[in-house]
Amino acid sequence: MNDSITSAEWVNPLRDPRDLRLPRIAGPCSIVIFGVTGDLSRKKLLPAIYDLANRGLLPPSFGLTGFARRDWTEDHFKDFVRENVIAHCRTPFKESTWTQLAAGIRFVQGTFEDKKAFERLSNTVAELDRDRGTRGNHAFYMSVPPRDFPIVARQLADCGLSRSSEGAWRRVIIEKPFGHDLASAKALDHVVSEVFDPSSVFRIDHYLGKETVQNILALRFANAMYEPIWNANYVDHVQITMAEDIGVAGRAGYYDGIGAARDIIQNHLLQLLALTAMEEPVSFAASDLIAEKTKILSAVRLPRDLAAHTARGQYAAGWQGSHEVVGYLEEKGIDPSSTTETYAAIRLDLDTRRWAGVPFYLRTGKRLGKRVTEIAVVFKRAPHLPFESTATRELGKNAIVIRVQPDEGVTMRFGAKVPGGTSMEVRDVSMDFSYGRSFTESSPEAYERLILDVLLGDPPLFPTTKEVDLSWEILDPIEDFWSTLGQPQPYRAGTWGPEEADEMLARDGRHWRMP
Ligand SMILES: NC(=O)c1ccc[n+]([C@@H]2O[C@H](COP(=O)([O-])OP(=O)(O)OC[C@H]3O[C@@H](n4cnc5c(N)ncnc54)[C@H](OP(=O)(O)O)[C@@H]3O)[C@@H](O)[C@H]2O)c1
Image 1 (tube, rainbow, N blue to C red):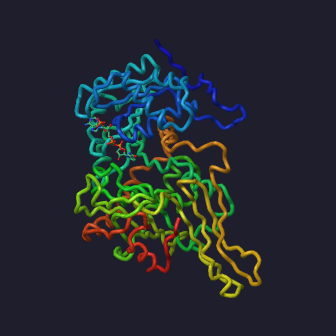
Image 2: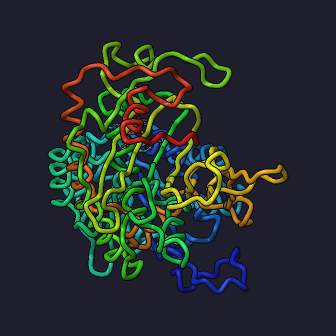
Image 3: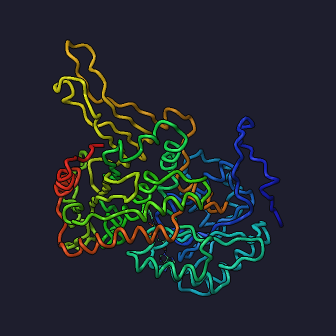
C-alpha cells in the first residue's frame, strides 16, 4: 500500500490559524538511528522525534528505523520506543500521534561490523521509499561511541546508502565528541568526507539547539541598546560557565581520559564564546552566520603563561545537597590513578578591535555547587561616581547575564539607591527576564530543533569542520601543557572548584561570579 502524503498536501491540525509564521514542516523522509538502544537515543532522540510528530512537524509518511544488535522483533522494538517516548516526551502522549508514527517504525538487527545487516538496512530503506513514500530522503544518526563513526560511515558507503538518486538527499548526523585532538578530528573528517558530501554532514552540538543560545543573537542584533556597549570600551571581561552538580554518573568509560575541557570547552563553551563575541552577520543564512563564528574563533589568542591563566581540578569526596558523594578516583569504572580533570578553567583573549584587552574566562566542571550554564558580560565601573566613597562600598560591576540553563532568561545587574536612610547608599540589584514567565509556550528541546533542521537541510546551528578544527587548535596546546603536570588539584564535591581557579582570576584582579 502506498500511504504517502507530501508536506504540501498535509494540513497541520495543531496550527493556530492566527499564527502567520510559515510552518517549517519536513518533507517526505526517514531517519535511521544507529545506537538506538543507547542512553542518548532513549532519553533524547526518540522523545524528540515523537514531540516533532505531535507538533505536526513531521510528514505523515515519516519513517523511523532502529539499528541495534539485540535480537528483537519489530513489535518488541515498537514497545521499546513507546515506553521511552512516554517516559521522556515533552508534549502530551497521544494515541493518534503514536499510531501514525508507529506505522513507519522499522527495526534492523545487527552489529556495525556485519555487512549483511547493512544489506538488510538498505532493503528496509528501499521498502520505506516504496510503501511509505519517503522518496529516497534519508538521515543517518550516529548515536554511537566515537570509535564507531568510521566503520558505520564505511558500511553505509559500501551498501550504497550514502549516495542518493537525483532530487533526493542523504544526510549524516554525528554526535560529539568530534575527535580527541586536531589530528584525530582531521582523520575522522577525512573518513566521513570520503563517504558524504561536506554539506550533508551535520555535527551536533546540542547547546546550539537551545532557545536561549539562539536568544544571544536576538538580544544582540534585534535590539538597539546592547550593541553600542558590547565592546572593549565598556566591557571589563566575560565569564562563560557550564557547571554540573552531578559526577561522572555512569559515563566513566567515556569520560576518563577525555576530561572537562575536551568534553565541554572544545565544543559548547567555544561556540557560546563565538556567538557572544562575533560581529553582526549579514543575514542569518548559514554561510553568513558561520563566517562570523569562524572569524572570531580564528581571532582567539592563548595566554602566553598557561600556568598562570589556566586551572584544572578533580573532585574529591564531599556533599551534594544532603547526599554524601565519593570522589572521582573512587567512582566505579575510574582508574584510581587517573589524572583526568573534572574541572577546567581557561582565559582566552580575542585579537579584534571590538575585544582588545577584554579577557574571556571559560570554566566548566562536575560536582560543582549547582547545575547552571550562563554567559556573564561584566562591565567596567562608571568612570566617575559622584557619591561619598562609603555610599558605593557594596556596589559591584554592572552585568548582563544570559542564563542558558536552567530557568532560561536574562538578568541585568546594576546599582540602585537603598530606600530610606539618611544618607545616599547604592547597592546591586537585579532585573530578570525569564522565558517561563514571559511566554506561555514552552521551549522545544534542543534535539527537536536540531533533528528538524537536519530533515529540512538547514545547517546554521551545526559547527563546520573549520570551526571544529579551530576549536581543537585552541585546546590542543592547553591539553599538551596539562599533560606535563600530573594530578589535577582536588576540590571538594559541592564547592565551586579548585583554589587554582580562584587564584587564576585573582591574579587579574577579578573573581568568579557565584551563579
Ligand atoms: N548520553 C548523552 O547524554 C550524550 C550527550 C552528548 C553526546 N553523546 C554522544 O552520543 C553518542 C551515544 O551516546 P550514548 O550515551 O547513547 O551511548 P551508549 O548508551 O553507550 O549507547 C551506545 C549504543 O551503540 C550501540 N553499539 C555499540 N557498539 C555497537 C556495535 N558494534 N554494533 C551495534 N551497536 C553497537 C549500543 O548497543 P547495545 O545496546 O547493544 O550495547 C548502544 O545502543 C556518543 O557518541 C556520545 O559521546 C551522548
